[in-house]
Image 1 (tube, rainbow, N blue to C red):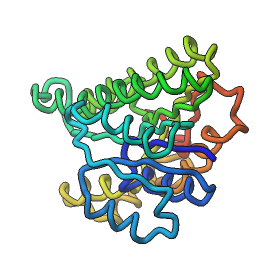
Image 2: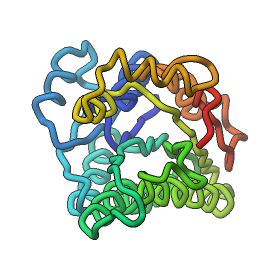
Image 3: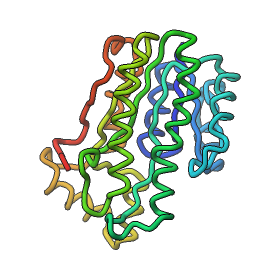
Length: 248
């Protein structure tokens, strides 16, 4: 029985990964700041014994090692690490202040870096493991008003390739999943704050995305489940684009 550890998991695509993993019979550790939402997820599940939630604020690495240790204590091993959590501040290079820079780098890069550090140790011992980085079409240069975000996603791609190259000898694989424009709760809230309704957002997106629509939170799930499964035993250092054809 596999154990899947998610950086995130209370909402958006992370929550869909949690649900899909439970359907496969996997144990799932997930984290976040909202204990109410986490409790609702656990209480609504018929597989409560397969779930572990760890409250954590990813703006600091305080608690990252505890999340790792408690997951190992509960499930004994970690077969797959899903690095999903991230924030997307709106700021161009010339508009980025230090606080915005620090927040996006702490959540998007520092937190996954140090969680990966701990999980790698256990994967090395068990001589197996799959690490899945959630990337973005912003990884190459990004939109003008997403500079710091684009930098974190580009760096995560480098980290994924670094792990694939240096830790394959331990049976560990690492892959980078580029997720396109997706109608997550966070995206809908951001656009709502900009005065854009969900209907207008999807209409706008349909004119930009070559395949004619935004991604739903479920669209990346088959790719994630493939990377978790033994079907991808020899797949490492890859990049998979689930973007509807969108390139930024």
